[in-house]
Length: 102
Length: 164
Image 1 (spheres, each protein chain N blue to C red):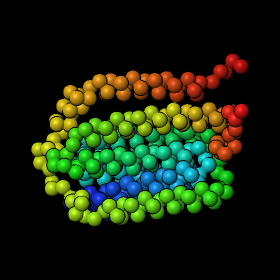
Image 2: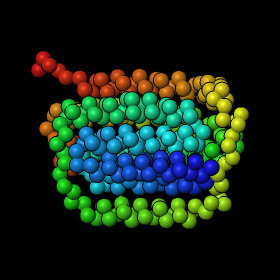
Image 3: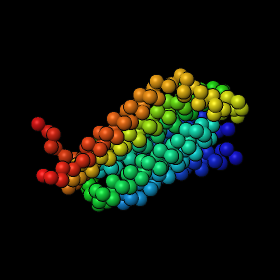
Image 4: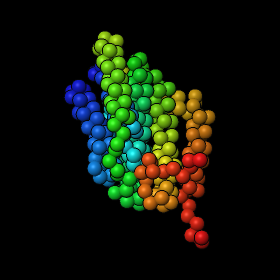
C-alpha cells in the first residue's frame, strides 16, 4: 500500500492548481472549474486522513458524502447564475461585471 | 500493483486538472475536468472508500460535468476568454503553490504516515451505512432540505419573464 503522504501530495497539487485557476482566470465557468478542483482536493484529504487508522474512520467518509452533495448544489446554483449573467450581459468575463458596484 | 495504480490515477488526476484549467476550448476543459474527477474517484477506491468513489462518479461525472457542458453550450464557448493581465496575482499564486508543496515535502516522510494494512471487516459497507443512518440521520435530512432549497433557487434565478 502506498504511504498516505503521497495521497496528501496529490491533494495539495490539486489545491495548488485550483488556486492558480482562481487567481489567474477571468471566465466564470473556468473559475467554477477551479472551485470544483479545490473541493476535490479537500475530499481526497479527508478520505486519506480517515484511512489513517485501521479500521478507517467512518465519519470522514460520511463527511465527504455530504461535501460532494453540497458541491453539486453549489455547481447548480453557480451555473444558473452564470446563465443569468450571460443573458443580461452578453459576456461572462468576471472582471467586466461591475453592476453591483456602488 | 497498488503503487502502479496509484501512480496512474495520480498522474491522470493532475494532468487532467491542469488541462481543465489551461485548455483553450471550454468544452475540452469540461471533458478534462470529468477525467480529473474520475481519477479522484480511483484514488478513493484505492483508499478503501468504494461507496464514496461510486458516489463521486455518479454525482460529479453524471451531474456536474453534464450541467457544465450544458451551460457551456448555452453561454457559447468563446465568451469571456480575454488574455490575463494579472501578472502579480499569478506570481502570488505560484508562490503560494510552491509554499504549500514545500510544506508537504517537509511533512511527507514516509514513516510519519505509513500505508495502512489492508483492512478486512473494518471496511465493510454495512458499517458505513449504519453509521450514516444512525448517527447522521438528522444531518442527512437537513442535506435534502438544503438540496431542495438550492434547486428552487436555481430555478428562480434562471426563470425568464417572457411577457415583458
